[in-house]
Length: 163
Image (cartoon, rainbow, N blue to C red; front, side, top):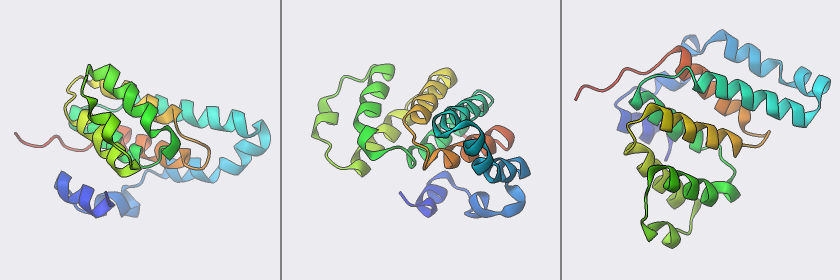
């Protein structure tokens, strides 16, 4: 899904994702410090530190809709080779027994399948577990996006839709 489609589905303006004033300055500082962290600690330690940072912000995110949306956005930064194992993990967490997963062949289909399962979850703790599984499946090349998403949602949660 493109960011525009996500915004349309969520009923929010694209500005939510791109307005500079809506981006927490700490996110920008964190991303600028990346090279220094890697230089001081080594790449493996830097990746672990970034994953720990993302997880700490995920723990602060509240609201089912906000958590679902965060999981959807973070899914875009998952290593394509690990999508199937994430789908299996999420399927197990939600108690899904459908054999539909076996028929999915493209990364986009797997992402949509996982997002569909995420949309059916109302338990915030379960959604946070899924977000943490996504974080663990992220490599150094895309963890910054996940950190930024988690920080943004923790500090500027989306308003729950009226039912």
